[in-house]
Length: 267
Image (tube, rainbow, N blue to C red; front, side, top):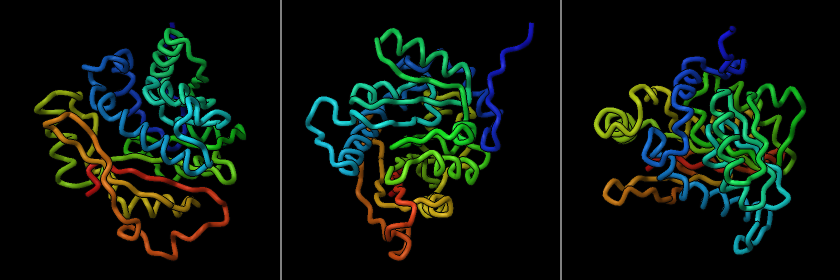
C-alpha cells in the first residue's frame, strides 16, 4: 500500500511545515488542544475581517449575513476555524490547504455543523493555474510558514479579482513575539508543540508591506493585535500606516487590489 500523499506541491510549500501541521490535524477543533491560541484569536480576527469587508464592499455589518454574495478564499485554512464563521456570515467560501489531513478534518467538521464549504487539498499556485478568482482572500497566520513568500503572494495576486481585497495576519519579529509565541506558548505553557514557529520567519510590518507591494497589492489598513495573558484575550490596537510605508506607496494602484493587514504584537 502506498503512503498517503499529504503535501500538495508548489514553490511556496515547505514540506516540514506541512508534516508538522498534518501530525496535529485531528486536534484542530479542540479548544484546549494545540490550536488553543487560534481559538482564542478567532473572535478578534473575525471581527476585523467582518468590519473591513463590510466597509470595503459597502455592506451593512448589522444584518445577519453581510458577506452574502462574496466569493472568499481562505488560503491555508487548516481545519476550518475561520471558514466556518465566515460561511455563517453568508459568504461562499473555499478553504484551501496544502496538507490533505487538514482538509479531511475540516470537511468532517463542516458536515457535522451542516455547513456547505468547498474544501480543497491544493496550493495557492495551483489554484491560480486553474484560473480561479475570488472577491476576497483571507491570508491568516500562514505566510510565516511558507517557503517562498514571493511565489505565494504572487499567486494570491492572480487569484484576487479586480477591486477585491486580501486580509493578512502574521507575527511580528520582535523580542515580545519570541517571548510569547515561542518561549511562552511552546516551552513554558505547552500550548503548542515545540517547533510550531520559527522566529526567524516572522515578518516585521515594513518587510511584509514591501513583499505585498512588490506582488502588486496596495495596502490600505494596518492594525496591531496584542495579547493580554491575564485575560487570555486578543485585542486590536491602532497604528498609523505611515509608520510602515511612505505616502506615494499607498496611493491607489492600477490593479485595484487592496491588502488589509493585522500583526500580532505589532506595537
